[in-house]
Length: 235
Image (tube, helix red, strand yellow):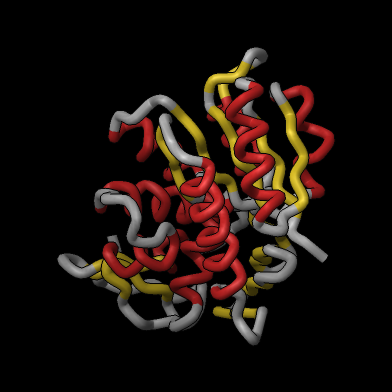
């Protein structure tokens, strides 16, 4: 079965050119020209191509709502905003790629293909990861702390999953950026720090020890072998 792409773009010529290019590459494509039209399809597609400037709202708010709800569907942003701050803001909210206008439909297809390939490649043979009392299931994308489910954004989930691959191992910020966001964008250490801060807050919200995600000064972060474990190197 071909993968299903939702293209949310209000400029008809651009939307149809992307639809044609994606269809020719074997994808099933649904077009929406505003946020209201897109909502019925959001949970039924494999990837969303999302313009930021839409007639009934800002696409960045739709992205924010998707990630706050825990929906992990990959999102490729389309935008005429090419400032570094705009790109970083979208990526920190959980966008998987950011394409600036003008662009060629072939570039969008290549970006879509790369994101879907990365998502598929990153699926582990073993879907569960554990550092008691926390357990993580990547297929259902559920993070449980004891009997409590943690409400994580896509980026928070992927960041936690990356560190849970090797509890006790120290990951540099650069390694975490590469694992979670890829190497297409020059993100700062502050991006990782802000998401770790959010993860610690959510661990505390379910009754856990925030410093279970330990800071190793001058290096990066690690997950303690047990979520009840603290460490003098943590901050």
